[in-house]
Image (cartoon, rainbow, N blue to C red; front, side):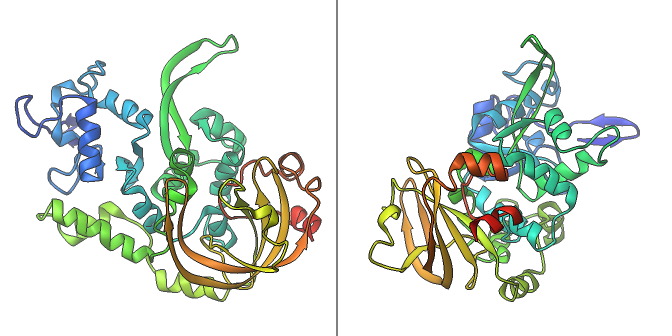
Length: 374
């Protein structure tokens, strides 16, 4: 889509063109095939949903043929992530390719680690904190909860866009709002979510074992394979991402020890009795954890409580394992330092007293919880 002399021009194909996408199912299948795609025309010829559809059907309001309506259905499908992913403009990333983008765009950081290393803004932190207790939020509700708007923080849209570009957020759906009577009204608005809430923490971060630069090169090569006409400058501008990885890695290596709370699922491993006869065990290494850190192990249901405090004494132990529930790329060696009464730091205590409502992956802890645990 381009503005020529004050007039918006749509580019596309005829209905009977072999490259034309006729239905939302065609679009989803195509997105899964190509892996990722901007919504509108850009510097790379042919690299957009716009250029694969009939221009006259845009904004006609018929979800059978209107690509603008399709974007809502695609976001809702759970097969493809939607958001402002390309030059701060809308686009799609398939489930297969999301881990590559997450590693590349996040520069290998979970958001908690990004904040701890002073690479995230206070506004970004306010927004991401809202998703500690919620898997999804209406855009207007997120704005209110994060303290933006009249007499509050400014720059909500720009801050959300930055988080979308880094893949910390995506648009899960579009829905109408509800009034006090529970009745729907108005136009559908964006529902934001973390990709981890769609596809799980382990899957989204499954490329963290490689450098962000490697993931970036894989993405770049894929674009060049699909669109040989694209120049390196065009690809770099469209993909964006994190640079200076060597500097980041050096800083992470020499940072001060950090405390984490990590999940342990008793359905997959008998963690309750893991330290009955041993004080040192191997455990799945979480992204960002280094030797010298402390991990507090939260054991999931039916225990639902923090049981152990351990010191990380070795990391980056090679290990390959994958099934439908779990993927492990490396192990860390942890040494038991303290056991806790299962009634002491329960899920309810963590949620009500320390504001921790979800432990899906390694995350930092607050000063107050650190004091209590220590």
